[in-house]
Image (cartoon, rainbow over all chains, first blue to last red):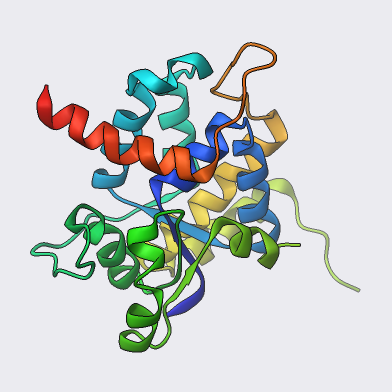
Amino acid sequence: MRIDRFVLDNNIWVSYFIMKREEQLASITDEYGISIFACDELFIEFAEVLAYPHLKKYDIDILSALRTLKSITIYHELTYPIKRYLPKDENDDYLIALALQTSSSFITSGDDDILSEKENLERKYKKLKILTKKEFEDMFG
Amino acid sequence: MEKQLTKQQTIEEIVKHAKKLDKLELQILLTRIRIKKMLKDGIKPAANPPKGTKMPTMEQINKWKHEARNYKAKK
């Protein structure tokens, strides 16, 4: 596991883009030398969430957002099959698999289905830490 | 005293080191270089909400993430 490797859930990515703070995230990766991993499953879901009608009021250029997301992340092609890690939502299992397959030490999420499994996941995968967005940002002052 | 490298020599040094990296290390290096360039050029925000638009909470965004999945499944 590498302490400079991260995986971010789509709710985190979407929040940075909606709040026009993608540059801040890019600055964090640059200044602290961290690597954020992503996969096709994450890119597809990211575009789907941004296209969801409730987000129309934020007038997001989806192609531009996707281009930025792809530019600041390191692509990893997930290896299947993916195990069940989250009893409450199998749709998020790919995030855990992405972190484990890329030896990432941190997953940042705002999803209760993931955060509620923090203790179990951290017990099972000793070097994996599950962070909230605030904990993630606190790491970088 | 350290010898000053020309631009061409610097590039050759970088290429020499890059060739020693494995695929992932090279990917990480290229991403870092790309991000540095993006930050130098400036990153234009993808969102352009009208002034006064209320920013959603993390709970709302997460709810939309789940709803978007169902929305797609129903389509």
